[in-house]
Image 1: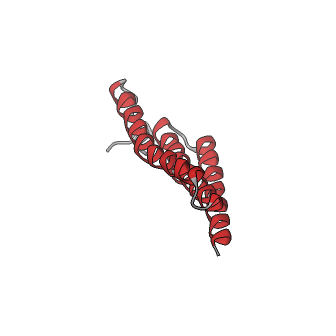
Image 2 (image 1 turned 90 degrees about the horizontal axis):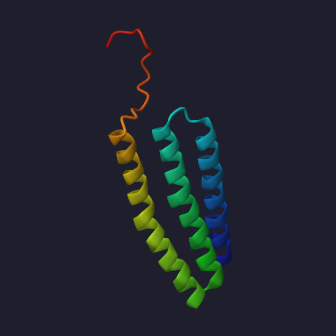
Image 3 (image 1 turned 90 degrees about the vertical axis):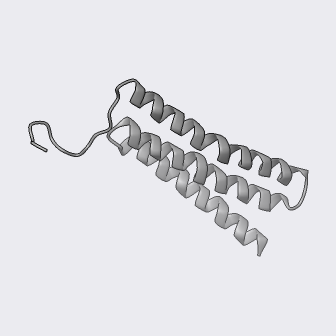
Length: 104
């Protein structure tokens, strides 16, 4: 049962890494690309680390993987927020969806 749950986490993590990579290539501006990369950092890497921890069982390796996961969940959103704030401070504005020349 734990093996199946581990594989589910690993496959889910791989899925989110692929979705994040496609998002980085397909998204039109910096802020949407930043969102795609943050999905890869938190969900993709988080599920991969959780799957590896389940594979390792209760051992020193799983404790280390858990600490890495905890560190990643705190630092990744903070870094993403800092990058977005720096981009806004540098006068980089997100795309709004309205075309140039339209009123509104």
